[in-house]
Image (cartoon, rainbow, N blue to C red):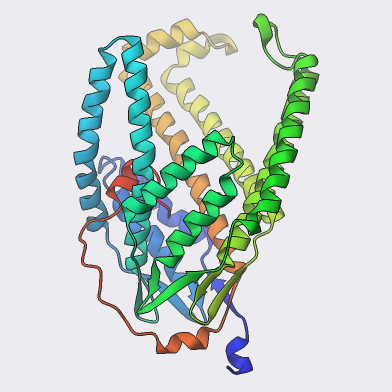
Length: 403
């Protein structure tokens, strides 16, 4: 192979936050009049934004899925959840012991179905992803993946989390060893050994920080024990411990992403990804600042609106909750203002998550990725198209979809 073929090719992401924000705001504006149904179209447009702005060797990815497929998948998933909702209602009429046992069984079933839904959703996205006109695909068994994930989860639970590196490496390997680009199958050369050192280091540090922080914070009165008001010093100690634990989790997350993605192979082509913990931290800090800023603006706007529609509750410069409740009960305008404000809070949170966490993570991975051996992919031939009409319904219903 020539040196040109070995030259690493960087992945380029060209999308901007302002472009995505405009798309999301238009989509959120259409969610209310369409009773939420427009979200399938919004999801499709978001994916086309991410895919089309991700370029490999000058050629962008292409997403060919459509909203009707997502809608049909969701309607099919209702066939699973309507009986579950009926079961929930039935359990609510039983004794507390029977209800707890029933709810626990349903929770286990839902956890198992999440594994199936995750794999099927990935299959749908891959089969609608093209690069240079050649479609990706996923084989394997969604039920097999669900069983693998479920039993690994039980082992992680029994071992208090110590088996997690084995679980993570096993699931990464299963996903990529059953993925295809045209007629060429992906490979995965990673193992649990690549995750062991960062995971067990993080595990040990988190346990120590948690124990010391909880002990000191409790001794300093940071916990609301017996109705006592927590002390400032105790709360500060607990917050510092929580922040340090968060930093360690970001450290491990960056190592898992970098090492597992860098273990992906496609014939002679190899992926290398570097995501740093400080970049993930910056992403979360920006999200927190943006969310706080948006909520402050909404709070000021909400007070102004309530001051107009429920002026009696703010008479004399003080807030009278009794007068406000009377206005709420007697005025449909006040009630609508509160409902609209609540929807704005939810919308602001969702918007900030997508703009700073969703976009931020995609951009970090894309800009930290390089690929060697791309010339070897010129001989790849296309496979048949996945003709499934519906997709991701169960994943959407369980809220385990991605992008």
